[in-house]
Amino acid sequence: MIGISKLYCGTVEPSDALRYSRHSGDLPSHLLQFSRDKRPVVVWNMTQRCNLKCIHCYAHAKARQSDDELTTAEGKALIDDLSATGVPVLLFSGGEPLMREDLPELADYAVKKSMRAVISTNGTLITPEAARELKAIGLSYVGISLDGTKDINDRFRGMDGAFDAAMEGIRNASDAGIKVGLRFTINRFNAGEVPALFDLMEEMDIPRICFYHLVYSGRGSGLVNDDVPHEESRRVVDLIMDRTRELHDKGKPKEVLTVDNHADGPYIYLRLLRENPERAAQVLELLEMNEGNNSGRGIGCISWNGDVHADQFWRHHSFGNIRNRPFSEIWYDMSDPLLKKLKEKKKHVTGRCSRCRWLDICGGNFRVRAEAVTGDIWAPDPACYLTDEEIGIDASTATHTG
Image 1 (cartoon, one colour):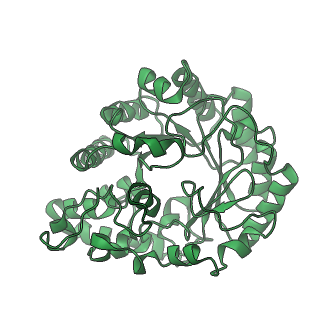
Image 2 (cartoon, helix red, strand yellow):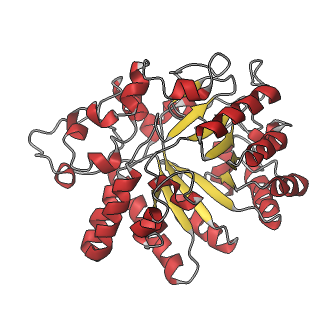
Image 3 (cartoon, one colour):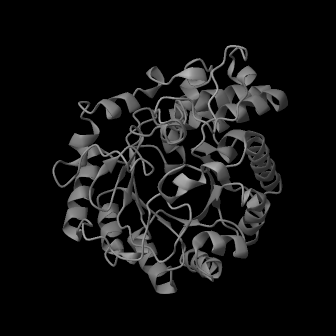
């Protein structure tokens, strides 16, 4: 997760994180990515059930409830364990989490255990009543996924009217006083929609937006050839920076982030070196705190059936199941060779990643994406768009994939 507004527009300074000793239990939510201890933010895909049919769904969501979903009691036991472990944030996701009737009860339980509870949703089921209930619980944030304007979004979501229903959900959540953000996954079919998303955010006064780079997982596994080419990735990230700066300069600052491609960090730094070297030095310090990709360390995932994964895209590999052992035991048990390597992934990456001068601030980028394309978990991430010159290696000897 790369904070464009934090880094490029200077809304966060290194001293802001240092003031809290960079301890995840003390840091405000907007500074958590700079924690030193990297207590995991946990995504709980609490159900596989969903009312939409998104073509890029990493969870292979479906209309019918899975028979092996964790029960409410098992969910509360999970929350007890996560709270005792010091997990700072629990993100309820799916499928569509609002398909579970006990979501409010479980979110309320997490908040009462002093955890920050957030929801990732398609927004179509956020009625005024649901929004008021979630606000009363003390929900920290609702992230609502869109894939573009009406026609493109509805095509991606597999349902006519999905866009209008999501807009209504945004209004209902905002009216109830819940912080709302947008979530947008970039691919070659909707990259041109980025300006429209910024316009929408400004018009509706939405405070936050996350732009996700495509990860080839779940139903998204078949979209490898639909990712944007490297030059387009660079253009889109530049556009995101430009529009973020425009809003900032207009006195309408928004929290803008990119997610799932840590090449964005060095790319921002290199641009700032040309534009504002003094700020670039501060950004480099913040990127070193961030440490890049944290799958298997600073972020983890639990499926609807209790399986534990390195993140929400690693469903093909489980480290264990919380019905057999608590998450806290599974997560810190280094007897699993993949989990151990993911916690120290910089030692194991190969090719141009292993020789990249930005390895310490990128963390080797997305291993699951490298595996999806090459079959090798430790190969270079094919979505890295930085040139050999930018990463400091000799192009004549560089090993390329993708």
